Every structure is written in C-alpha cells, then in structure tokens.
Image 1 (cartoon, rainbow, N blue to C red):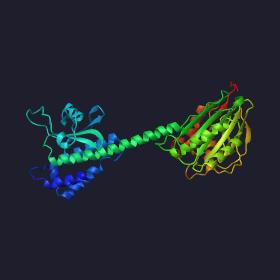
Image 2: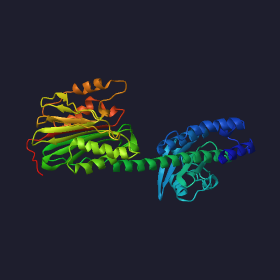
Image 3: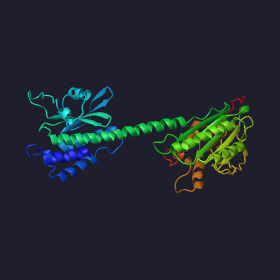
Image 4: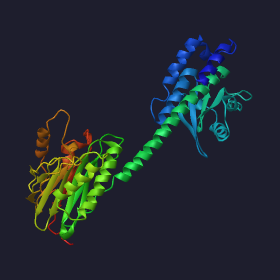
Length: 419
C-alpha cells in the first residue's frame, strides 16, 4: 500500500523533462493505476518460484521496453542471470550484478548507484538498473533491467521497486507453502508404514495409490501379520475421508490391529474388539475392514468383514470369482455382530483384497463396477506383482477419485510353515 502511495506522489511530481515514453503512456494518475493494476495482476499467478520470476521479468520487459533478469541469492550462494526476458546481450556484465547481489541493497537508489560503463562506447553509462527483490525478512535477490534508448527515470525506478517487492511477496508465499507441503509430506510418509512380512509359505504383494496429486497417504491401508504355525493375517481397511486426518486414524487402527493380532484371535473377534476401541474414541472416524487368516498348510482362508467389499479369488487359469463374506457393520459403530466364513485356497489360487476406490466410479452402480473387475483375465501362472499390475491397469486405478489399496496373496508350494 505504501508503495502505491509513493508511486502516486511520484507521478504527480513528475515533469515533462523527467518523463520517458513509458511514463508518458500512463497519462493521468487514474490511467497509471489501471496500468499498474494490470501489470501487478500478471505477477505471482502460481506458487512456483521459477514462474513468478519469469512473470516479473516479462512484465518489466513489456512495460518498460527493456531487457530484464533476476539474480538469485540463496544464503551465501549467488546465481547468474535467470528468467531472462528480452535481449540477454543488452544486460550488463553479470559480474557487476553479482557483486551488487553480494552486497547490502536496501533501496532502489543504492542499487542504481554503480552503473557499469558501456564497453561499446567508452565514457558512456549503460542505462541499467538494479532493484532488490525483497520483502520483510525474505531477500530473494535482485532484478536487473537494461535498455539502450534512454536511462531509467526516478518514477520508473520506483515502479520497478514496487513490482519487485510484489514479486518477492509472492515468492515468500511460495516458500511458506513449500515448507508446509514438506512438513505435510514428512508426516504422511511417517504415517505410511509398510505392511509387515508374511510367512515364506505365502507370496504377498500390496499397492497403495492416494487420490489426487498432493496427498501421499490417506485412510486406505493394507497389513500383513505373521501368526503361529505358518499362518498369516491379511488385512485391508478404509477409513472414512481423505488426507492427513484420515491417515492419522488409519495409523491408530493399524496399531490396534497389531496389538490384537498378537493374541492370535480369530478374524471376527479382532473386528469386534477394533469396533469397541473405535466406538470408545469419540474423535475416531468410522472405517471398513476385511480380515483374512490364511493357513497354507491346511489350504484354507477364514474371512470376516466390517462393511467392506468381499475379496476375489483368481484361479490358476486366469478366471475370477467373488468370495461372499457375511456383512458386518463398519468399525466405530459399536454394534458388533461379525461372522466368519472359510474357503479353500491352494497354491493355484490368488486371493485379491481391495478397497472401494479400486472399483467404485461416480454415477456407476457398484454391481457394474464389480462385474468389470470380474471380466479381467489374467495370464495363467502370473505372479502376484503381475496380477496387481493387471488389476490396476484394467480398472484404471491411477485415475480413481478415491484412494486405492489392493493386496494379492497366494500360497507357495515350496513354502515352510514354521512357528
């Protein structure tokens, strides 16, 4: 705001002798403000530093008929010219600009004090100007402007300083946003724990695809827990919501699950206790969950679900079939009522467990979505990683509107069921 006031005062005080073609084009103060508004609006349209610098130099080059570039300052490191707009050869020697950038530049007046001589015309000053790209504690660098037809007037210098300050303000916001994004990313990576290792008698592969481009993790998750006698507990869950908030609750569900699994409870008992724990936590979000206890030595799998979609089994010839599971209420309702069911599962079959983000599509009935999954055919003998690749590609999972977690497991012929 103070920069705009200074600009208005300078425009009122300007005389025809001081005016350049760029200054004359402003006409009245009202026209100058409209021109200023249009110029400023084109700077800082994104939260990307490179883009902001390029927008600044383009606006300056167009507005003042000059060449412009930015010299960045990062701590003790000073870069060369960047984001060049106009004729790069018209800019002064970069060593001069670097020397100024290494010094203390607090105003446009100090920045314009040491103009270099023009090597093509000894004794003449090159019409060049440096202004600091700085606001508050952020000192991003300097803006270097040069043109061959006329020196920069004080009015133009003040306007350049205002534009550079405006750009620096956007750069500060970009850096603040980048810092917050890094913190959120670190938190999400900490929450995104990898599943445990199953027994060697079971081949397992998992994938997780977060919805959107910014989130690294959400409320969907997969888990594997080793049990005694060569058995492995496989779990897929989906916490209501997205982003870090859902991920925090997801981490709580996973922690509770691991504690309960250590007691070697059957799947339906684990779900009942998870439901009780979640219902007693008023801020815990509801979640769906599917638990499978695989026993390769006996060739069977026991399943129990809490409001979750049933799994699919892929046969040795590549066909698929759904495995119905008694429907129980989601976790966190406190209603309980979970029931188990058991199926045969041998080394020719692959168990596929997934969250609804894999199959659900906006405006499409869930039965239609599940039928699309059932139509996928797999290469006979394909490994669990290949199966997941085929499923994700066939279902267009990378364009899904919701998080996707998927797990594939197959008993091994040569596996050992050690304690």
